[in-house]
Length: 265
Image (cartoon, rainbow, N blue to C red; front, top):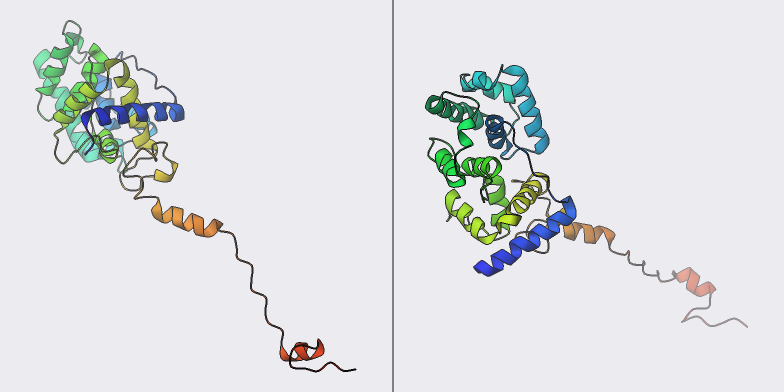
């Protein structure tokens, strides 16, 4: 297993390679914390396009966020669509989160966050039932400016393949704490955004596209996936051998005065 310093270097090298491929991610300006929390939950294991489409369906189907809060999970799941990643789980968690906050503050605006400090915001959401630590980390980072490195299934998958995290041995909170020590606050948002982009684009759960990944040479897992494809490609592009020249047939040898035949005078 790589040392802490090796993992730090690997993370920074990955950031530079991914920025070369995708560019620097734009920082979101959050004007509606409630919708941002909903988007955060929806975005796990979903592409940016899928998330945008789901948010748009939610806006069309429900009157407002309060209507979403009091809706049955089945209705939310149907609105998200049968093919939306982990739709049943997200349809249960979203109204649960909104309802807990509403009952404590009697508001769907979440202006109570404004006077709270960075650590307070994170701790508040971490204490809510059924709210995973990565949701609290995203809200604390984007709404309060906290130094946070949210770890959802996408980030855990990419960084476990890079041998930076070990989801089997670390909890979500432990992985986040490790990354917040390993990545500087000034680089955390960029690194996180680029890793999420890679998870969506190439480092897929079932069929990672390692042959197209900019981290191919850096990733210890990359050699496993493309091996068969590479071998097939090499076989296909290998230069064709020239066919061996056939030996002349007996009649041809006789006509040309081959060996074993006396030349006529």
